[in-house]
Length: 126
Image 1 (cartoon, helix red, strand yellow):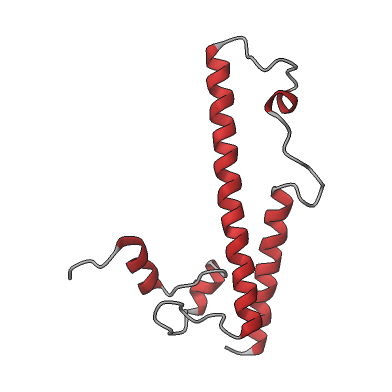
Image 2 (cartoon, rainbow, N blue to C red; image 1 turned 120 degrees about the horizontal axis):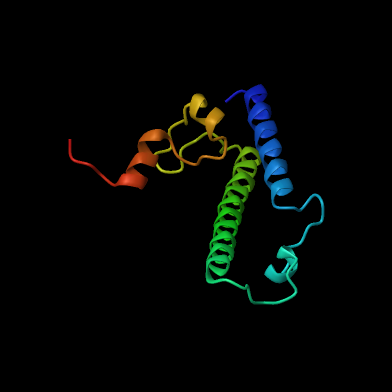
């Protein structure tokens, strides 16, 4: 891959990493607060079971979102390492180049479309 294209993908990755860090609150120094503090409630108990269920659901969704964002952040960091080592844009499974259109959409991907499909869906009979 040409150096200009590598720089392009490096910029995409750095920009995406900055967006994720901002969403996770790292740029503003936001730290996760205990649920009672975040909700403004001084009590650890809600007054209605439906409120408690809603609060629990909200916490679970936030936790899943943060986990997904942390996973993407790790993949971005690995992609930046691959750029530095000269391995970026090469499928980790088959060793063929990853289509640049795919890298535009998922710049941190490790696999070409065929290998990603095999990984996600297993070998499918033809």
